Amino acid sequence: MKQNIYASIGAAIRARRDAVGLTQAQVAEKAGLSRTTLTNIERGGQALLVHQLLDLARVLRVSPGSLLPSTTLAAIAQEGEPVPDTIKALLDRLKEPSAQRRRR
Image (cartoon, rainbow, N blue to C red; front, top):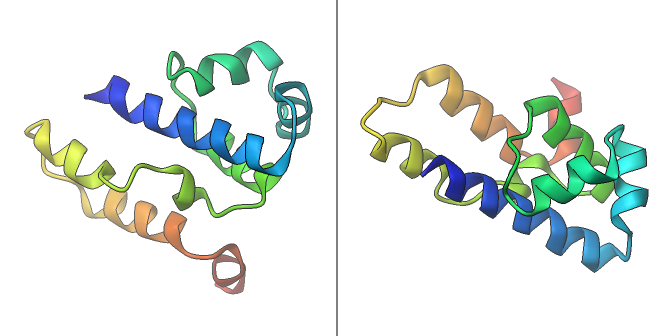
């Protein structure tokens, strides 16, 4: 299940990168990653940290939540673990437009 989440996030990053016409090298540099790291993330072969997701969203000019699969909470819950309120709050916050997050 975890691998599917990373593959979905990677596919969303690649789709957005293609949509804005940036190369992997350009996005990686602006996000503080190596091109190889971005390649691995886009292929779903590498987990990414929250700050990396935020940096990539900033570079790609989208909300971090738009890069997350819509079934993230359901996928976590299906693994048999309850979703902690702190995780729910973080995911909800990531789905907010960036302007709303800055006002807090």
